[in-house]
Length: 279
Image 1 (cartoon, rainbow, N blue to C red):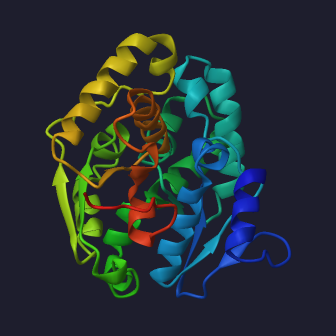
Image 2 (image 1 turned 180 degrees about the vertical axis):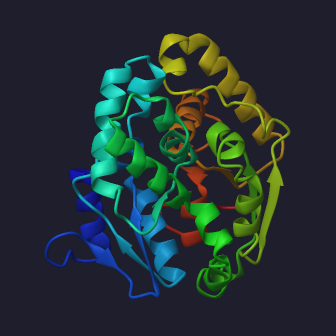
């Protein structure tokens, strides 16, 4: 978690030991996905800002690592189990765990049950899985999006058109499409539409994109073309891997600024967004 902690230090000085943010009535532990930590720490910062705006106290354990999804998807069950046990050791006693990644939430909630966990870890997982939430799901389920509405308006009366492309795990495992729509609805002046291919895989798929890169890129191009047909200012997704995938394709094609493909937390918090100019 070295990179993410450095990013947090720019947001607010760390105060002895693990960083805590906010003084709200509810306390959550933030799980930062690998791709966020390594490549898109601004999503982690945006997540903290959103939770703070909702009056939540955020705890970030710098000992956290990977949830184990990459080795699990690649068929390395022993390595995935080792990572899962570490995850359970770090977060097993947390009141609530929130992550800006439907993919990682799905791994912890569902896939850990397929691993050969020792009985004590299995019991801990059964207890933890009921307390792990995607960021959008957590905010809407607890009516905290209503607090965000008052503190995160679009600046300067801006008008933006955002096209949503649903990421697979967030859509099908977390069932987060409704929560995401509700959360985006708090922003006055934001027009939200779905891409015609919003419910179709963008082609990332983690290990899939490495094993079948040509097919992965072709799927990504179709997704990007479909979203672009809606003439958006921003393309909004719920997982860092899909964002990086579409940004790479956009950069190669040269027809869209990659930074305008964002996580919903960035849009809502105004963190890490590009300067947008209407033509």
